[in-house]
Amino acid sequence: MQGFISVLLLALAFSPIWPLGPNPLPGDPFIIVNKQTNEVAFINGNRVQTVVGAATGTTDNLTPEGLFTVTVKAQHPYYRKKDIPGGSPENPLGSRWIGFDARGTDGRIYGIHGTNDPSSIGKRVSQGCIRLQNEAVESLYDYIPLGTKILVTTSSRSYLELAVEHGAIRK
Image 1 (tube, rainbow, N blue to C red):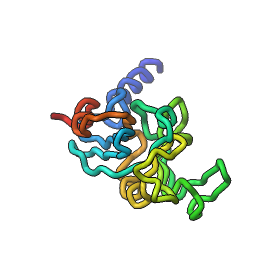
Image 2 (cartoon, rainbow, N blue to C red):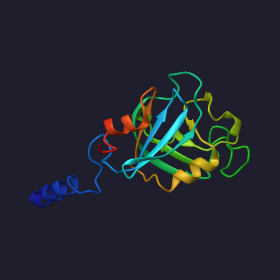
Image 3 (cartoon, rainbow, N blue to C red):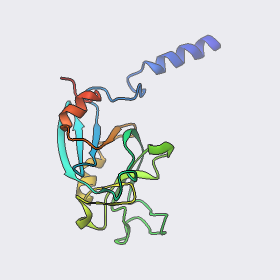
Image 4 (tube, rainbow, N blue to C red):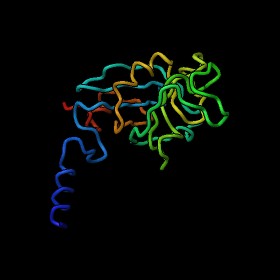
């Protein structure tokens, strides 16, 4: 029985559906958040597909930097901090939530989400999350499966350079 379990674990470890390593594979969906420019780039199919404006944390340390993994997705997310139901015009999370595992969290604290304040996009105004226009987060939502890697950085480098460095685009 132990031999069978060992073989099964090896098969899973080398399966193309098993998330190996810290980086995406070339062609995989990949997200880059640049706090310097307040933009989010969506990489897929070995190219930069789109870049949209974003809002990030009011201070440098509020929006954590690093390579993270999308672990939670929700349509019309509930805002538990102020008990605001999903779909409410008062909900600051907007229409979608794409949560990632920054700082050892489970994807329910840090995320990319919509907003009920479109004028905040392009500014440093959040408590740590990355805000997008509702239309932008809705258009990305279906293309970002659980397990997608997300790089949050402050950089003057191009999205192409960053994607190549992290394995999302093969040069």
